[in-house]
Image (cartoon, rainbow over the protein chains, first blue to last red):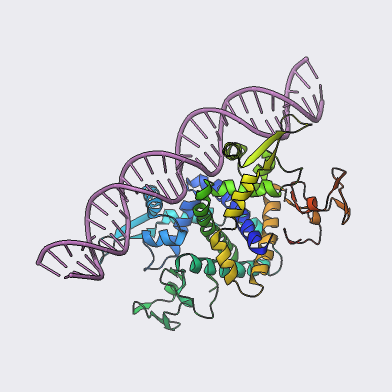
Amino acid sequence: MNDVELMGLLIDRVAGLVRSDARRVGAKYQLQPVQLEVLDYIRRANRYSDTATAVTEYLGLTKGTVSQTLKVLLSRGYIKKRADSDDKRVSRLKVTPAGLKALRACRPSPLLKKAGKLLEGDELETTVDRLSDLLQVLQETNNDRSFGQCVNCVHNMGKRGDHWCGLTREPLSDPETELICREFTAREQWHPIGKH
Amino acid sequence: MNDVELMGLLIDRVAGLVRSDARRVGAKYQLQPVQLEVLDYIRRANRYSDTATAVTEYLGLTKGTVSQTLKVLLSRGYIKKRADSDDKRVSRLKVTPAGLKALRACRPSPLLKKAGKLLEGDELETTVDRLSDLLQVLQETNNDRSFGQCVNCVHNMGKRGDHWCGLTREPLSDPETELICREFTAREQWHPIGKH
DNA sequence: TACTTTTGTTTGGGGTCGATACTATTAATT
DNA sequence: AATTAATAGTATCGACCCCAAACAAAAGTA
């Protein structure tokens, strides 16, 4: 068994256990694992990336599937939709307070929390680093679009307190630079998602 | 966002992409991601671990779900079942040549293969190491049962060419010590799955 | 013998997911 | 300006996932 096979195996298994745990805990809020992921994505998406299409690209599902999932989340009041001002085809998505509450209750799953405590020394940190790199590579391999924070994006100009996006030529607030963007293009040197 | 949240996020996302790719490639053989996982498990399970219950514990699903999945795999000729000689309740599972062929065609998924080539230096290796540790911890946290190879098991006695299991008091062939076992208990010092 | 536990199947229902067909709006072409 | 193509999103269908619950059969236990 070579390393790639092994890696695939481990990813599936780790994810499977986490997913099955997420299912258990999500049941209390009537939230499926995928719905939690959608919720989590929307919460962390910036203003260029809070649409159904972006969710579709990020999660690697078809738009039909995503549309259904969003419908459920809407009907349960976990997200809100508002029409885009420029483009009448698109809807902007936002997580409601109820959605945030559910999200915080379900994520990370109890299993992950417990496991996190058992990892020794810098194991947690290095694991996160490896996974970040891996995700980056997978996303680039997969859809030529990689999703990441403005902090690490080549399009991000300026400095702390005075950021702007070179692509849209719009200013970015400091908090905004920590959200994820579908137009993200990695810099040479970058920090893993969420590390800042 | 703390490291545990981040890790959960990364796991879900990495796995989601791999899973969606597995779905695409598996479609040619009418194999779902979960079915591939079951197939892969059975292939790598030793003679104490090739039952439906073991699959259930390994994958973290319910026995009903597993039973259904096995039924499909059986009907497609990807696995075979034979009655246990001692216990009339249990069936031993085995992957057929057709199953092996499908497995080899579908795993690892094209995405993983490509991504594996893009990882530089020892990145692949260290990623595997981190994931192995993580899986070990998750399994222990989850079901007090961790699945692993005899090579790394405290119950494994003797040396190369003359192994035996201290729990069942039965001899083990060299190849057998590389299969995974549900009675596995990790040694202090152990090698990641598949590294030998 | 009567009980409990373990192994596995079956059934029903809610949910996932891709494929396909469809509408509405915007962008591109001619 | 009119036509055509591309894009954002919805709706429906069918195959399948997954759990829960009820069940049967064998094994272990008191």
